Image (cartoon, rainbow over all chains, first blue to last red; front, side, top):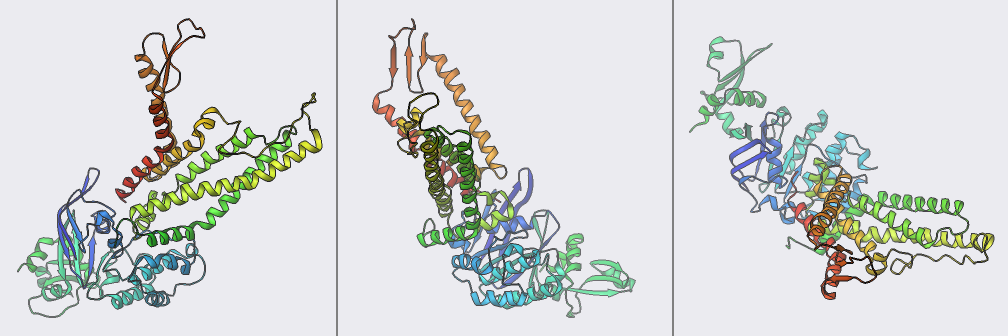
Length: 277
Length: 281
């Protein structure tokens, strides 16, 4: 579905990506993690056709994104972190926008805004930031684009809305669809993402499925100094040491994405060694 | 699916643009009409003899057209000035050509028609009011028996008071579309302050052009020869009524004038299209 080969990108003299290779397949929800300024949004915008590679090739559903062909734009939807909605009512906006997307489902859109409790009356610009975001998420999901790119989608959402967001995403994904979510709020998406991508200094530092992570790593808390010494990564907390350990006994533990992320960033070699075939 | 132009897709784009902006556009037209009426009202108050004459109508029409038209053109692609709005604008599944044609439809065609309609909606009753003032109060120029006569409504295509280039080649009217197309390009080219930056760009170009004709072309003329206009040169050593003039063949001269009259806007639109296509956000 998405293939990135030898991708180079830089802002003036600041290199962001150099020789990046990545493949995204349909039927997955990818979580894109990385520190500020590592290029998460740049990658999303490059996939959406808003930034052009300096070198290398990006192929999305057989299209070259930089050409921004209408057929490509119908199939790739980017939900940006910052957005702007026109000063008109939701019904008028939908009337004039939905027609561009052949797979748009009005029924799904109505279901989403009901689930998110978005008010239907009044101008969209009069809504709060959170309401606007929920509206745009509802629209993005109703577009049913094969590739959905989301940049920090849970920023600005309240606790109930975050839970509704997870429900809506889980309910909308089908085998032909791929969702790439860039986020710092890993906890919000813990039960949603089925593959983790970590970017650091313009390269993919970690790229594994949640199944594989569960099989090969275990996340636990312990006061045992011997166990702590064996950890690939540890962090002391008030409740003891939080540990990331190799899963040698085949126990099934739920990955703690925040810990995993820190472990990947601070002990990437050790972590990646565990995943080597 | 055609990736360059589909009429139904363009129609959707136009309908969407209108739905999002109609309130703003209608208010702007109302404000324009109000300002023009206020200006004419002021003229009627200070001049009871020749109010809203053809020259004043001509000036009001073109000053408004150039200023408002260029300002509006510089906002046509204002979405591209902000990252969040630009992403949403560029992600609408329509081609760059359709987006450009939508901009041209609103910024060039519909604006011109709406502006002209608003102008005449104010101009015709104000001229009629001016004529009533003349008929009721003065009828003759002060201190003479010469009748003032009635003031006519401005005819854009045939105005005896217009400067020669406009009377001869309609250069003021056609020049407007050329200047406005530069502002349309500016709205894609400059992310911020596009109006001011385009004004500076045009002034720099104009300054360079004057320098070129004055310092380069005139310096290379034989001794005693001077430029008559941009396409003619003359030699008049004794400052007498007899002089020699060199001019381009009529066909070439006419061709150049036609090029200046009609080729600048399409040329700028083509550049705007490529800038839009290459726009990154």
